[in-house]
View 1 (cartoon, rainbow, N blue to C red):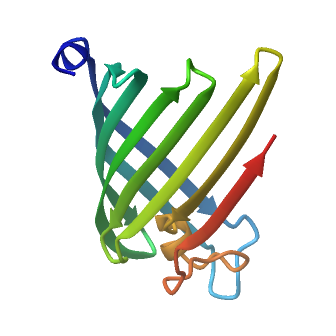
View 2: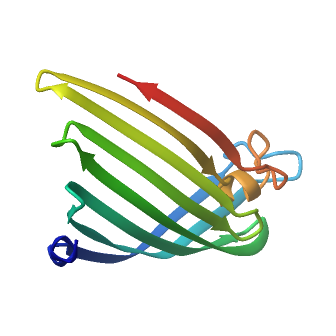
View 3: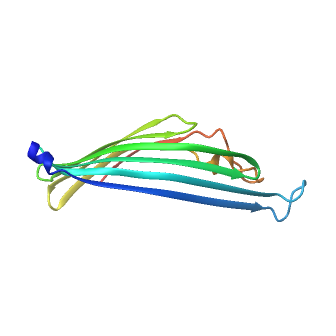
Length: 178
């Protein structure tokens, strides 16, 4: 009802972040061609933020969240060309408490995009049933996805370890209950 919509509250948050990783490799023994040395620096600058609205609507408690994140990765390495890529994601999630809070349903949908890879939709669904105060049954199902990091793709050849620019993203499905 209009009165229920008027009771919906909002909670906005945002953050900026920077991550830096520096690696230096020096082979103390050397190789046939001489001493092997390399440095690799990966820097990420990003933003994360979202808004959450909560309140009662149609006799149920609702919590609707919208999240956005974006970042830019940069790689500088002594043994390979500099590289950079952008990433972005958006997620929409609903939490609905029904039947006097005996049922909690949490559907969500996320879109992930990373430059150089296809965009991917990641759905998930959670369910909690509490028929009595002493019993709680839970279940979740979700898809997950992870693109390779710059070190996995472009780590300079150090004789025992090297990057693989042909790596594909990891994809998985998860089911759990308890």
